Length: 184
Image (cartoon, rainbow, N blue to C red; front, top):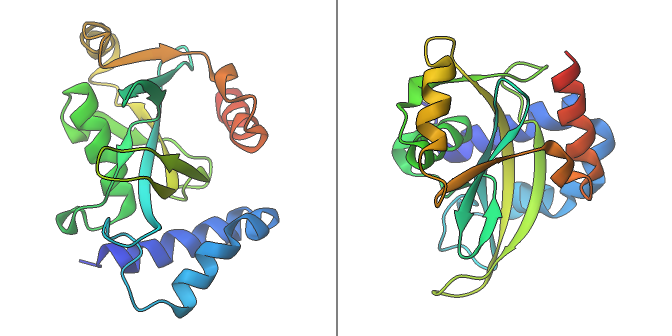
């Protein structure tokens, strides 16, 4: 099983191959991967470290958002060594937020297991402010969970909510990708 750091390098390579125009946005991450001896997924690495997030598209193409420190965000967070890959990290965080088993979610990207998006997010946390460099993976509910799990997820509105993808219109790159996926 590859380490999370090795999976980060793989995710990075897949991402820049699928989206070469986005290379300039990844300049800092590129430098970190090439020159740092530290594990960039280690939460102790400051001022920034790599995390994984998930976009869960519902049957109606709405996106699941999670409550985190008073704001609505994509479910995600830090990698654990047992995750193996950043894709596994995103799936685990999605399962933690929804209460559904990890096998409830299938990847739904147009390019296989390539991350859908990369973004940097300032995190204001009780233990100190820092920056998350997140690879975002796209999921749908597996067929066997269908509508029944949708009702279960909607049963805990204090933890998460479904939202129209238009909320991402300020992030033109992510918004465009979500529109492409919804149209496919």
